[in-house]
Amino acid sequence: MGAEGTTVDTAGNAPPGQAFPRRAQTFPELTTQEIARMRGFGDIRTYRDGEKLFETGKPGPGMFVILSGHVAITQRDGLGHVTPVINQGPGQFLAEIGQLSGRVALVDGRAEGDVETLLIPPERLRALLVAEADLGERIMRALILRRVSLIQAGAGGPVLIGPSDSSGVIRLQGFLTRNGFPHHLLDPATDHDAAELIVRYSPSPTDWPLAVTAAGTVLRNPGETELARALGMIGGSTDHKIYDVAIVGCGPAGLATAVYAASEGLSVVVTDARSYGGQAGASARIENYLGFPTGIAGQALAGRAFSQAQKFGADIIIPTAVKSLDCSRTDGAFALALDGGETLRAKSVVVASGARYRRPEIENLDKFEGRGVWYWASPIEARLCAKQDIGLVGGGNSAGQAAVFLSGHARKVHMVIRGGGLGASMSRYLIERIEATPNIELMFNTEVVALEGTEGVSLERVRWRSRLSGEEDSAAIRNLFLFAGADPATGWLDGCGVTLDRGGFVVTGAQSEQNLGRPVTPLETSVPGVFAVGDVRSGSVKRVGGAIGEGAQVVAALHAFLGDTAKPAL
Figure: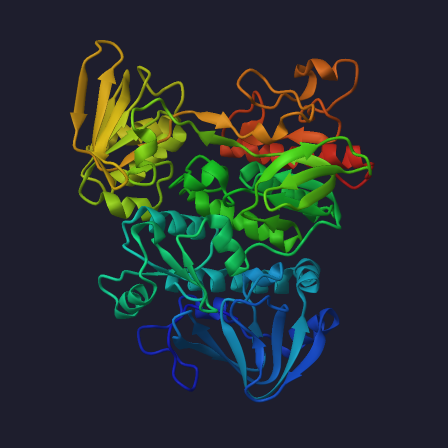
């Protein structure tokens, strides 16, 4: 279920030059013996000619293995366009990565003639992937490649309508991209269908962009949560379930905790207010993470971990913010109040909410956020910088990775650093790369003080000041990237008894005065059963590798707290 979005002929063959990349891995054919091994995980389902097995925008029932007959896969968008994708027959299976957690289908599957299938629901599919290692590896690779193909083709998701450089379009594109959800953009200036829709709905400037779901629902400049609910990205209610562990934050630390805890049999739920990956997801290339000698994009690393967590059965709820934590444990469980009005309950809690890039004291900053001021450097923002001078504030690894990435698009990168050097805050390999990049200008002992432009429209000029001489200068800069320090995301912990340090980071282990006199693990907070990992933890090393290590390490402490004798994470 799901493919690259390439049109095919009636025989299911792609036109010349449009074949699926890695087709054999994306659409493997199962042997009779392999199907026999899978039968214990599913049930036989039959379908008549023309009957739908699954439908775009509706929760998928799981993975279908075709035993006889053929199924036509088509893409359908909210504008009424239906595009053939591929035909699949006996020995092939229909699913993509979303079916590990019962998410909505992104394409339609219709029986062509009578069809007999083996339907494997999500929970049994996860069991199959674990129990049948070799076969599970082939299936998992195919599920991931199919989602990648859908994303690359912009197939199966919402249609965004609006100017490609508008702040609303960039905001929603960034949200969908960071969450691995396919979509495509139509600009009314060049696309006839988009122009017709604009005439019909007559949006005002504040309505941009329009988002059209597969069901034809039109949303005017929706918020991320509103769009996510309309697309079925947020699953069903969890009000009546008590999890072993609730993880707040889906960055590297939270994902590592989810993978190790779920793989060892704990029931796990993970929430995040934005997307999986956290700040690490903004890294264009991480080159000093163990096992990736050529480097890996932060979003790619997070995407693999996200798929792993789903494979082992972790429930992941994005975007959903936790408003508060109740540590009274009146029924033996912590209560986490969510922004949608629901309550999560869990026997233990892992705080992995990370830190957010700081908003520096810059004149007019709020007027240009999303209109030339960015806290993320992805290909979406990079396309706006083509052959322009841009500004970048910050001296840490994330700033360095962004500067190198953006230098490949911009004419010149003005890198503004408050301190007198980079050695104390940035890895040496990044410093050497920045120094070797001719279009990156380092401006030490300097700070941005003001922004100029057309309010509510676009940034046009940036002014900065030397912290040594006090002299000011400016440049025509339409895009400014801010990676200046980080503030912990711990406001939701107010009043629950968890000790914070002066900077607002979570204190763990023997550092907390409230822990004196009781044995505690290094990652446990002042509240028994509440742990903290990653950037949000006071004294953490603020590196991807460190965050992932803490996420693995905390699982042993979770087992101990829960009274489980299972083998701890390695």
